[in-house]
Amino acid sequence: MLTDHHTNTVFLSDWLSKECPELYQSLTKALQDNVVDYRILGNTNDIWCRDYMPIQTDEKRFVSYKYYPNYLVKKHKERYITDVKDVENVDFLHQAEVVILDLVLDGGNVVKCGNKIVMTEKVFVENEEKSRNEVQRFLEEAFQCEIVFLPWDEREIYGHSDGIIHYLGENSVLMTNYDDFDKTFAQDFLRILEKHFDVKTLKCNVEKTDKNCWAYINYLQVGNLVLVPQLEIPEDEQALQQITEAMPLCKVVGIPAFEAVRNGGALNCISWNIKI
Image (cartoon, rainbow, N blue to C red):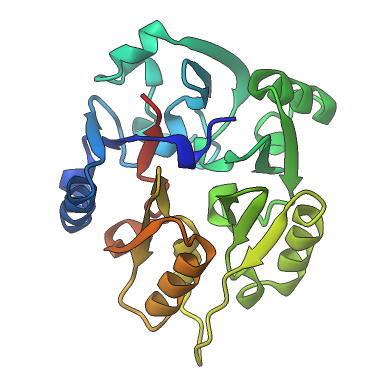
């Protein structure tokens, strides 16, 4: 399975420079400074390109799916749904094998972890016309690997696993500080994840936990470069230090990201990193 460690190119939505100008400037400068190729996706309908772009499983194989999430299936929000067939500046996909997965899915609910993928059980809710076994079979056939399912905390309407964990490599994952928000879900996540991975956990030692500090886990990794959201809160330095210690072979850089975080996503959400 091709993971973030193998990627070398970052794509961003053409909306990002307009919706999050300071973030766009900081992010693209960091990519340029570290000689990482970045490109702009044309004809998108929102900044969250992680959610609708195909998922790369190896250099010339991608999995596409139905992007029709229930949180956008409302008359005043449907205009934000991007049809990947309309996206511009992805001509290289015509030379790749694109597997069509007959399921409703968000790319943010797919975290590739070595030879496994971690998802929340929201995928079963989004495809309730199919049995759980059928949904699991479709996923395993498309991604050609084992799927690890985490319970869905329905207070987080998106149900994205990339707000819970990130893959560190060598069968290790880093989990966000969920224990600061819900100890029961945190314990459930750990119980499941520890059956498959060595789990490290972010911890924020502050008097009062900021509601947005979940965002640190939603960092962007491309190759050996790791870009971590910064929110101008006390937790920033702690998160940056812990992620640096967890990834000693990587260069870890902080990126001001509140423009995106206040709208429910962070750096992984606004990017589509692949290997070209």
